[in-house]
Image (cartoon, rainbow, N blue to C red):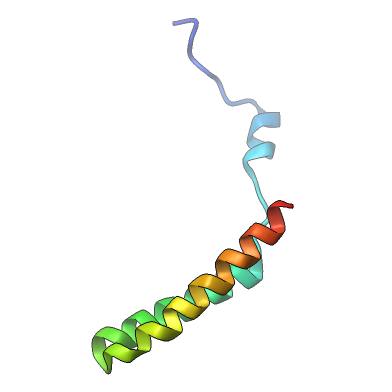
Length: 64
């Protein structure tokens, strides 16, 4: 029973994080391209891959 971790107000505040609006926007656009891939034409996957790479670059820039 001693190993239980209880969430206090300070740890709850640490869990709240700001989200990167650019990353969320790029992710939604990429999801749109994936939907178009299945519904319209398989070549739309290229757009999803491009946005995935841009997103990855944006996330890595935030860690430095």
